[in-house]
Image (cartoon, rainbow, N blue to C red; front, side, top):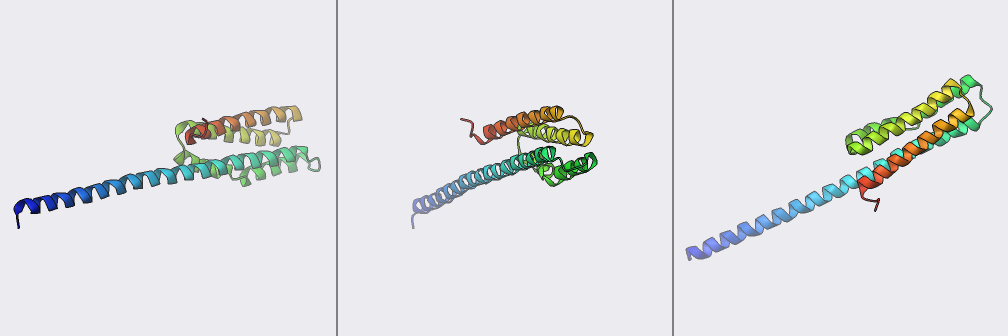
Length: 153
């Protein structure tokens, strides 16, 4: 057998294996990026849902007139704790980029402010102001999430 044939065969095998490995690496990176985007999309949706669900429950609590002030304060704390946003916020902090994390922190603080005002037994107009701040913060968060996912265009 001719040495040139052996070298050509060996070189062909190296090129073939190398290109297969490179294609697999590119496919792996693309699949990994897609999985990460899916994870973020799911987490973002869950977090927004938890914030909104808790906000709605707190709003319903404001409208309910069958609670004493102490019962309303206690119920506000329960709704905040059970809403799920606090726990999801930790996932946000390790998954989302900084601009989304900052807005997620702000939204959670605004939700906590609503809870605090309910516990302080302030007037309905003061509560309306807190709810408006919360809604604006959640909108800002949603816009940052959309930008991060490339859905803002």
